[in-house]
Length: 281
Image (tube, rainbow, N blue to C red):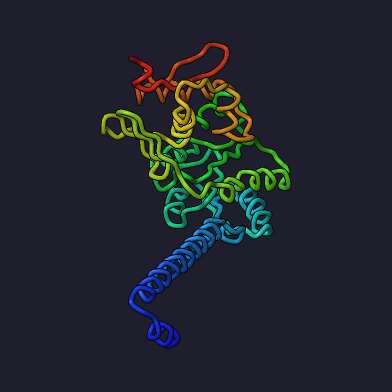
């Protein structure tokens, strides 16, 4: 009504100029509202991705009822949702049903041992981001190597005080709340690495990689030609878990076998670097 009153007393030139200015201001207002909406959406998305403690699901797999009960009691007291299984096969069945954020495995169990259970879980893409912790009386080096080779994130030997175990679990679970909001894609020539889809393709051929090997490849390929020290790789892939340097050798050997030896170059005494096709010519 005000616009009508003003424009009715203007000549055609002034009226057109006023209309243009009003259209411009309306466009600016629309842009501000649209930007505010996008900002609000991003904030909602950020809050949604944060995992609350009471929403975290933990699966315990051990054939000793006393150990199951002690650990279950201490974790439940912290506010976590805890599920239990007495052998590997039952553990897989419950994992498929409950999709836990963290799984604690013993090695020596009936029907299916912990190493086999871990391998089966890692073969299932639904558990790519699931944290797997071994809690076992087996302290030999070969047992630890077998566990990490199967896809374990950490390895703890029994006996261990409940408070120390809970602290270790809290440290591992921080990865859930610290995960990035957006995921990256690395692509050059024939190589494509999609972190969100957890996929790698070379010349349009899909290469299936376990989580640890994928993280190593993603780190190296993020800066082609840069030499990453072994300590840097250990810290990025395994965090504060205590693993030996031989663990990197095992994963690197498997990774090269799957993607081809030419892409990863060893710098003796230092570390590794990624070589894409342009730098290979």
